[in-house]
Length: 141
Image 1 (cartoon, rainbow, N blue to C red):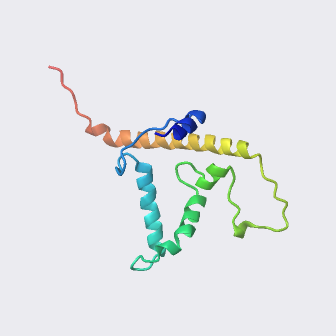
Image 2: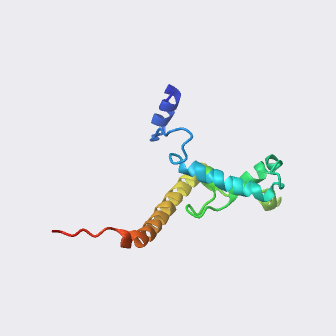
Image 3: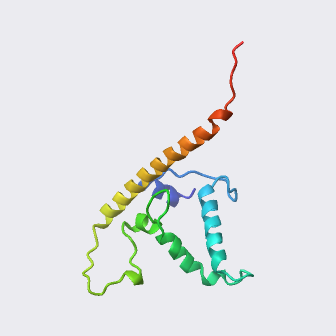
């Protein structure tokens, strides 16, 4: 790890971990996002999938502004602390007043963490219920 990255992670109190490159088991979130992105692009691409690059920016905009199931917020909202203002949302008569930026982001992150923990408990309960009957029985003797 370079000194620059080490300094940045120390400054922002980030626990950076090292993973094996090109191994999807080490980076499941990236592999899952790539799968989703490819599926979204396949909907818009032609049969030969030669024009996917024409739709990449629109597909990424759709992904970044869509509410995610786990966090119950969009990636845009978690990054910027507000919902995106799309051209279809513009009302040229309103007086837009942004909320305090840092407070919005901190609130969004706290809500996302709460939703992730909540979803994790639901997933754990489902997993435990499903695999409880498969655990081996130990017999003393």
